Image 1 (cartoon, rainbow over the protein chains, first blue to last red):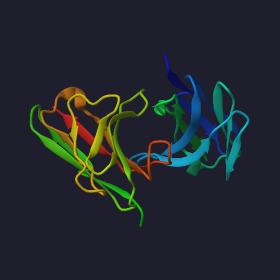
Image 2: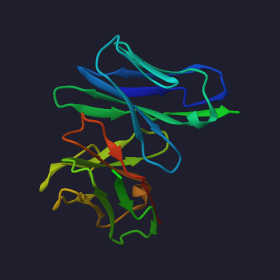
Image 3: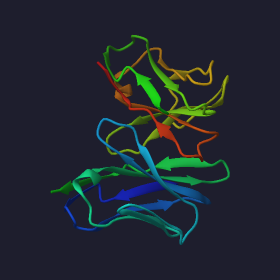
Image 4: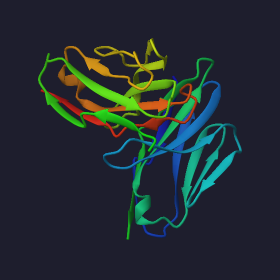
Length: 110
Length: 113
């Protein structure tokens, strides 16, 4: 069965404490993987698209990486404003289906 | 400002009372879609539209209708809402298809009593 799993469900960090969020997937024919950020009371906002294993993208304190089975969103020296729910979505198959993970809620304490 | 707008943002209704949630985008996007977001689950697509007058079912279309008479608008219609449709709904748009970056509206929180 095609599925996308994000872990952990929630993560609490102190400001400056680096960590990683995981998005693992079991699909046939990966076309791409998206990372979005969702703030409370708002819609998801696009962060990155990764297309093939080994690809990496960076934006400020965030770095996304992709392997054949999973993607990581690395957060370096996070600040309280990085607190949000981070969603990943996997695009796959000949019909370009899109499956979303349930998200990881990240809380950065000052 | 480029954006996707939804109305209303919050709605409490009763079982069986027809309702419409509006969605509008000002980016001249071809592709629009509706999602629902429930606790512990990923976003699930309800319906999508590749262009004016072209709509198709997503993963969870039962109990919903849509229309695309104008490029900028994509309303979601619940003709006879039921409690299991209580959810957070998002409209999204992208240039051509779901493979493109999607821009989301602020969400509509619907409660069906």
